Image (cartoon, rainbow, N blue to C red; front, top):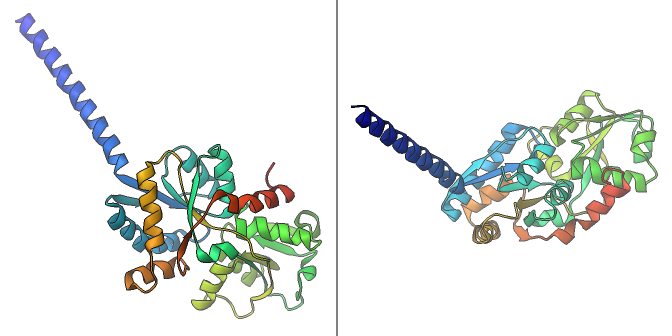
Length: 291
């Protein structure tokens, strides 16, 4: 009887072990069939979800696998998640890509960018009638977006420096709104005397009539490279090619594609490469934002 019980216990343990192994393998297999995607939170979370929904469905059809959007708390969290293999694909700004490239020791791969990102700009705005030029912002409260934002902080700060304005010493106070649409709200409410945001979000807010009439543009930066879709370097090479092909296939003449491109504020996607962001890395070092 004791012998039988011992055999039964051993058999039960073996079944449990095999079941555990099967479960772990199933979880791993499931993880391999889900493309985990995220984006830097440069706009409100609800807006990011709205923009991604049709793109996610399109990628699922093109890749033949589930695509899940993973929301993150801030810019740094996207970089860290990509570096720690918790994300497979991420929408990054130029500066965030530079940070991700450094954090992943050069393994992160920038795949595609919107055609508009090859010549991106930022808009300096104000609601103060006495501020007519960038020089007039000296001694005022100035709002940037996120500290890690290319178009809402790094490049505007760099171009201000080229114009003889040091954000650290020439402004009465520097505020960080956290996102481009939030910067407009800061300026409209008087929380900041002036601010800066990317041209794409500014155009969208204007189109949607979400900008207070008193807020206006006082200057535009020179063009620079910005946003891209980046994959982690150890992703299956075949899958990487399929992701790139899916973005490059988007055609504005196709109604389904037109909706996706419209939400992404893109006319089309084009290939990109690491070399395009060398200038941003240099600007970050010159502005003291990268060692």
